[in-house]
Image (tube, rainbow, N blue to C red):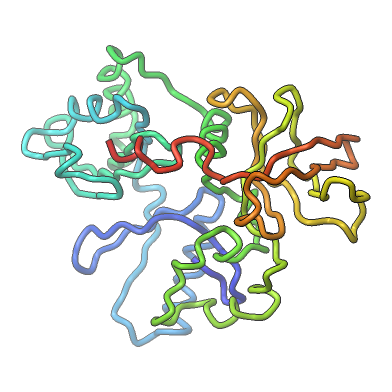
Length: 299
């Protein structure tokens, strides 16, 4: 979702539940902003449209169930007659169904962790009962709750973005999603996103970064400088937005924006953090560190 000035506003999901029935899942921080935006569009840009929007944030309890055994866990709860096999309910599918003997639910096959994953929503009053049922169904698989710190590590490993990257100054092209802006159809922000400064080749774009020495640490906010160049404003090529230690790779990794980041994979540069006094050599790579082909999502 773009703002009118062409910058990315939010990167939630849209699920089609019926011919004229959609549900938008926003990022947590932007729920109010997105609701305000679509309401403004309805009242100001297209008042003639027969469409109604309502915020249902408080109406539903929604849980993410992630991991290689997530389908097996859900099969214990989903009522007979609903097929959630990989063939019948593929990646990015959504459906209305019932669980636990007739409780209405919505199931989405989406993943923010990079694993096989689902999100299941029920009316808020059933939330406590559902999470207890999920934990019981997953007991044999050693199911465990995981928090935002663990999720942050997994999303960096997978190259998924949050507010650290979508900070109001990035375009769809900057984050590698420029092709999602149709060349044939209009959309809010399309014209302004084509301003020369926003499509210039020297504009920093999304890339992944990993330490050359496994023992080195990375910091968000560090700036990238070519090897052999002075760390100065004139030599600044971009900046780091998110970092973590990757248990999968055994080293620190990060996401950030650097000039020509999509064509410089394998090149080494310096990540300089003047505030913390760090100067670390990093290698530019794909932002998709783990399972780059998305095979885990589709099993």
